[in-house]
Image (cartoon, rainbow, N blue to C red; front, side):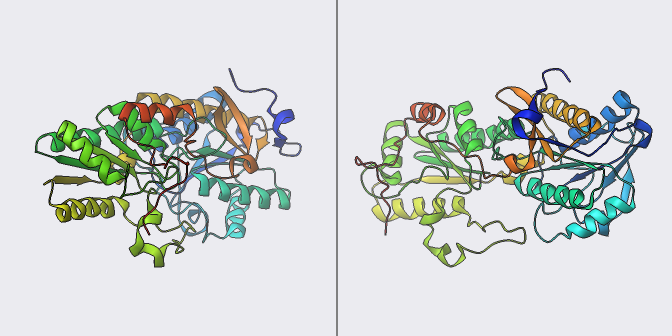
Length: 400
């Protein structure tokens, strides 16, 4: 347990299961994956299974198929080191997935855990999944069961609070580079070419920001945390015209949650939600592309060629790269050590560079967002030389 915080119980009120001592012969563990796909999930599954087996001699590990509902509506599959030996080379999850929150029967889930004699539950997923894990943990505690519930945070959006980074994020940024490069090639190959790339990021623009900083081919990055406007002095249209005049082409990266308030056609859908309780978003990439085309067609001062690329599901479906594979291994082993020590109700993660155990209530306090007054966003503005889309008084300008 090198470099794992030893004093987390005192610092974070982390709880231990009452009078629990896990003997390897008595451990019956299960693994479940929920929410959206993310690079590295299979690596974590592999390392939990191998860690339990090789470090502690645990032989009873089940995979729950189909997410939380799989506890009571689907079959389980046995997981051995041989079964998971090569799964880290694949994208997705070998266990299948479903929504991480909402629509699941907590009572039935815990009944299944109890009936199967499971005493360690490893839950992989994003913010909704971790909230679901917290509810399951509370029900287990209410029943007085000696079961460890452990969360492993995965989110390509990197929007899980407290922790430094979610698994899969590095891979997502790396894959986003391919889309940005394609957009740049398309843009520079034609006169006044514009490449628009929409990347994942419902409420947090981390992928867009880091991919932009890494690429050096992006002229403008738009994220949910930094509202923008289209027309008027220093608006997006004016910036596009200026950049095309200077360079003859440009690339725009936009996160999927950016500019939602500007899409007038979506006003009736602004408060609609999906089955998991998430706000339904309009396709801002298509909307922005059409707005740009319409603006320059109406002005008749500059003919443009625009290419729109949406790599959303390509980004999250690929196998994890080397740095994420290492990170997944460390998280999985931290989770195993914590469960075997009798801790419960926690998520593993790196906090200020140290592997830590974080209580569910701390990890579920909200989404992590890009701080646009922080240095990283300032570095992006310097790299792209884009405007901040603020008027001199610091208020946002929006078109009625």
